[in-house]
Length: 157
Image (cartoon, rainbow, N blue to C red; front, top):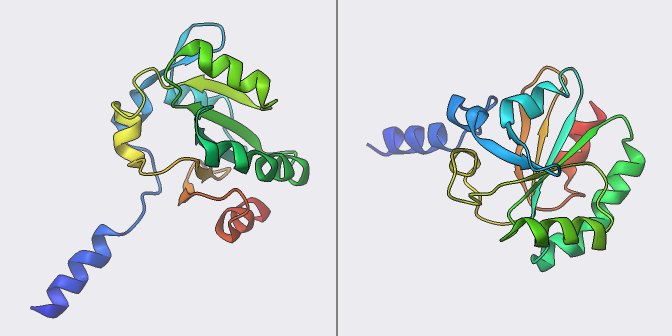
């Protein structure tokens, strides 16, 4: 019985390597106010390594982490940086980008944590960082520090 339980636990803790169809079909808002699917966002960066930063301008830990993100951007210039915002409104989101001088591509998760993408990634804390490799596989699913060794190693590969 114990072995079965341990096996079930180990299977459930495996992190996904691909986004679910529902997560890919979820739509976010661009800075220009257009709707775009997660799939389309990722396709724009096909063949490149991608860092996804899920954040909000009201999040103290997100703001404290921005210098680490900027250090990553300086060290890994060839990587695409996507910022998915959980801000409460588009105005706050846009002000936050400007105020904290956040460089990269920006998308507003208008339904915040109540959407298919959020369900898939199971957001329990922000900031939340993910890495998608050049082959389109999720190689880092859940880290909360931009200087996490798993994240940095994934970017080096």
